[in-house]
Length: 441
Image (tube, rainbow, N blue to C red; front, top):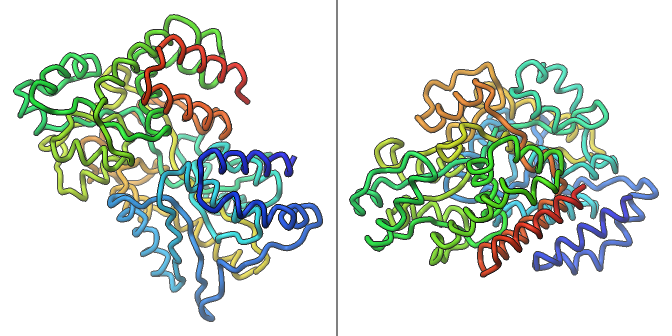
């Protein structure tokens, strides 16, 4: 199983053309397998005792945009205030770029002390290989089962009854962000839902404004696909396909309407030549684009740009059509370490990340919702209040990371990159997608 996992990870890294990963595998694979098979202890080069009363912990993550960097600094400040030291291991690029690097280091015997991943199935095989620290005692002491809301977030950190990660936020992808300046310049009212946005696109184009900002990366295009799916096909069809892996529904009329809507959105995004999601958000901030389909983390970029919700930008959860949000998000995992001082510090950090004060400060900066259901978020802006209201009403769905394996997610992202950037027909894209769902694990 471990060798198969290593081989699959290598294939992902090569497919994404990640500099240096293939060389790493050629040099290290033999040692990795020996270490895993014969129980050689993992090294602790990334986490060292800084002083008698403090420990340095290297923490890897892919939060590098302006808003993300501000948010992760809240974690670092809180950890440093304990007398320990946060060694920031930011990896530029998206999670698709960072995850193979993170996993390669863990497998290669050079683990970081803590790492961001999405709660769900991304670390499943690392846990099965015995490479992730069991946090069950920390979770029980902190009564995580009583405070984490929705409970599915903690379930996604649990395998065989043991808890291996600490969820730190709820990120939802079903949002459209609207530029007030762009609509004022076009002389039309802000749309109230996805259908009105599509109808407003000609006016935006006539004013020289790009209707839809879209970064040229598969994960962003897949995120937009998912948001449009829930808005157009509805939650029941989405659940049948994403959760139950029902390929017949994926080939059915509800998804035909989805792929036709995405093909239309593709045309509205023509000319959006940016790569990164935050660059696309900046097009909305500057009024160069009317809208962006992006997760709630976009709020961090609006905040850094001193944009005011309701005055400079607006948001429509569920694209204004289906008031539901998926409960994806981020969690921190802690690779196994043979130094008891480091292990104790890892558990201390895990408890800190979910503490009330840190949850408030981090999520207000990140634009995400807290995982704790027992803290005061009255200072949150209107968009966050909308999300909190949906969460309180139970309008939630599991995220794709919770339902689909990392391999399947990568294959769908590749398909979406091809569909959005080329001239693939909606019918051909739908059939290719249905086949991926049929083969999904």
